[in-house]
Length: 340
Image (cartoon, rainbow, N blue to C red; front, side):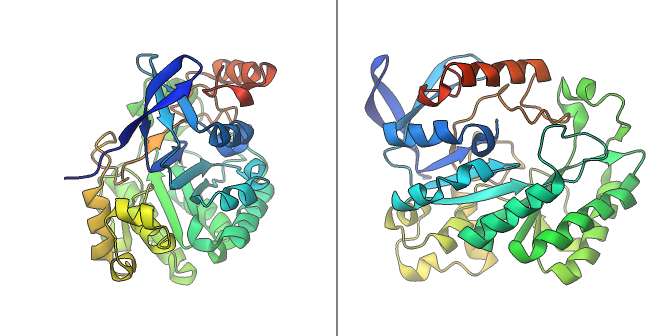
C-alpha cells in the first residue's frame, strides 16, 4: 500500500485544527511562489504551517510543515528566493527547481516576465549554486502559432537551449492544449495559436532530437499521453521520486518515504528502479497522464502577476493583479494563506 500523509494537530489562528503533514511540498503549480511570495513562504516555514484554500469549494485545508523533507519549486523567475537559499540549507531541507524558461517575447504571451537575458542569467546562477541536477529547464507550454509554425518554435527552443544546456540535465516540455480550458481560448484570441496534433507534435520531437545530439539532455513530456520514445523523449515526473532518491539520499526520513532504506536502494541509476519509485507513489489527485508522486501544493489560483496569456490558473489579468496588490498592501507575508 502506498504511504499516506499523517495528520497532526496544530495551533492556527482559528484555534487547534487538524492538518495534513506531507513529506513533499509543491510550491507551486498554481502561482509563482519564488517570484512573488518568497517572503511569505519563508515566514510560513518559521511558523510551521500553511493554510491552503481549495479553489473549487473555497474551504480551508491546513498543511503542517513539521514532517516536510523536500520542496519542489516551480517558477519563471526564482531570483527573489535566492536570498533565502542559505536559510533553506541551514534548516536541512531538500529542494529543487523546475524553472520555466520560454521564448515568447516577440509574441508578448508572457507580458510581465523579465527579459529573456535576465532569466537566462538567473537560471545559470541558480545552477551554479545548487547544481545542474536540481534545476530542471521547462519550455512549457510549447505553443504553435500560425506566424511561426513548427520551424519557428524549434528555433526558439534552440535559442534558449544553446544558452542553458550546460546548466541542467533535463528539459521538460508540454504541448499547449488551449481548448481544454474554459477561459484560455478567450485570453489567447488574436494570437494565431493552433492546436497541436500528432503530426506537429512529432515534428517538434524530431527537431528536438536533432538539437539534443549536441546538448545531451534527458527530454521528457509533462502530462502528455503521446509516445515520443522514438525520438528519445520519455514521460516525465515533475515531482520526481527518482530524482529525490538520487540527489537527496542522505536524508533518511525522505528515503524511508520513498521506500529506499539502504544505500544500495538509494543509488537509483537504472530507469527501471526510478520508475518503480514513481509508479508506487503516483499522486492519485493528478491527471492520469501525470507521473508526479504524492505532494501537497500550497499555491493559490488568481494570484500570479506574470499574466501569461495561456495560463489556466488565473481567471483574468485584473483579478490576479488585484489579488497581488491586496497581498502587498495587507503585509501578506504574515498571513496564513497567500491571500489574507
